[in-house]
Length: 545
Image (cartoon, rainbow, N blue to C red; front, side, top):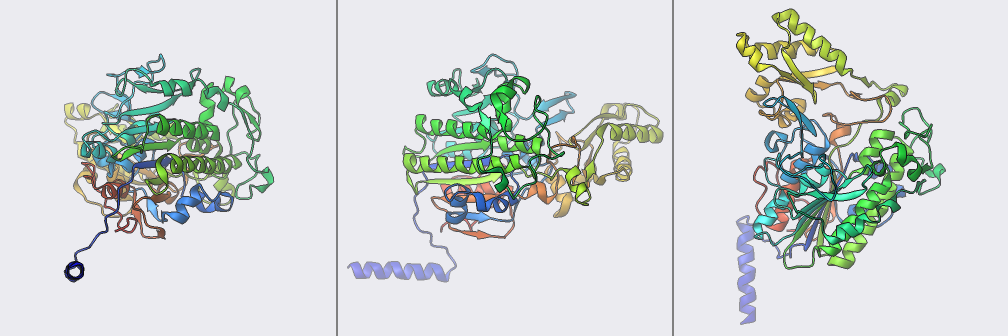
């Protein structure tokens, strides 16, 4: 009888194969998904610092997981808010609505923040500046879909130093999101969107944050940092109260002139604190120990602050990544113990990359430069007055977008499309502007590739401006010390994407993947619906069949 049954199963398998039907093995779902975002991590940091990494941090993900080596953002601007939103919603700003960290609201004539919400108040600290929630995010995240799928039995928690890095990934239905309030407080906090009080374990953790204000010296002898430039260069911004941007840094002493606890954000100890807080959350919330999958979103912000202050080529950046590698090792070893080896899934990516300091690039004879926003604004207003004989046609210029006063244009019988097109043609003649697109073009023409497609994917009809412009490669609007991001170029769009754990193959690929592919891949792994605005595709090459 058993032989007949085996024969029937074998014949069914051959029939399915002949018909092209995939026969999937029955793999169990992970008990916990950990979605890690490293703020401002270029892809080449994996290869540049590889020889210095331990075997159980980044290299565990690379050697025992799947490495998508050609992973890119499919829109501009490449900033933190839209980056985190796009990773977890599986779609770009044109759909989820988070077009930047801050943007000009043309309906209220004010600048809004991507996570602000005046209907809630801060919990854990007395301030009006931490009123935050995900209400501006227009679509669901993969974590939302997990909660819906399990009738809210799955736990979802978001953690980051930055509020937007904790709130946007965790989505609308999260059990909690915690972010760090620096200044004189030095606490992880939340808002009434999630809870009216902090759990005891959070309050207990907050008692010890002073211990992270310590001496920052290199984790290796400084002469071994051959992957970076000299420690003392003119391309770095020192902390206030320290003449040079050189090791060591006494953080407790420097904190008095550098925002109190905020100084931790621009050091690797901000990442260390984030790791310890995440481990505390896993332990106290018992993540990954129940009969449904839980989800932890974890964003490391200090890498971004360090990059902004010291630049891509600095010893400070390298040391921060070597220390983050140790933090990841600590986290993974705890997950092995608490959740169990082979019972959790991790993905690691970044919200954007970063450009090398343009003044440094110029010293190496590479085309680069700086864009003066005030001079540009004056020029824009001048050409519009000369052409249309009206003042005040421009209401705002921000995020490389020009917002026109549509009410003024309508009252005076002017043609909006004509002004948009004229301005588009004029500003491409301006120094350091490479391309420009009118709102009319972006809403009536379908770009399928190139910079136009990236601009279009980042363009939201209600939130974006009348004209969008793109700067030349390695040209930024930023001080001449330190670095930034936001462009459509590969140094900003090319970031790591690593998968590891339950349901993940071992391997690597140079096939191009996009940020919007991450959420549907995790959704497919969990067997849940894709986020409701999802435009990405599951990465079959990553998943076990």
